[in-house]
Image 1 (tube, rainbow, N blue to C red):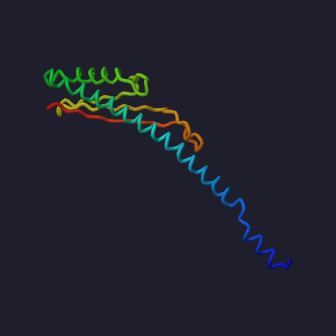
Image 2 (image 1 turned 90 degrees about the vertical axis):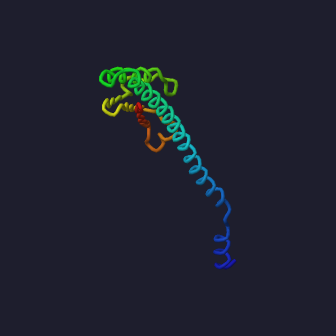
Image 3 (image 1 turned 30 degrees about the vertical axis):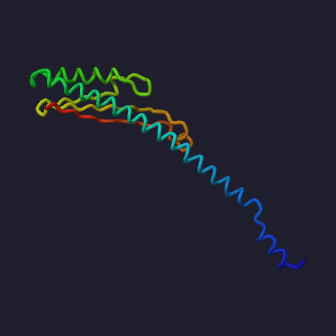
Length: 143
């Protein structure tokens, strides 16, 4: 067997090449799938947080319909907090430290911010992301 034939058999022997390529592709595919699970969970929590903020802002804004503008501010703030604290996000009640309420009496508007920090991740830990922060804001204006 001369040198040309040996070289040709080494170059054309591709046994196992597809296996190695598929192993690398599967690791990448599983990694992206795992991140998609964490992102879907974060979007779900964000939607729940937005729901809580919407309910609290609407409840606070309703105080301007029930009271005179001058005395409605404390009632609007109380209603917004009350409705926010009655809600749950991921089956956990909302804590008062997660709620911020701003009442603008001159424009009959109530703004509510809900923040949820320390949301644990499942698969993103592999790339160093151990927890996520999620927040939502809603505003309601009486008219």
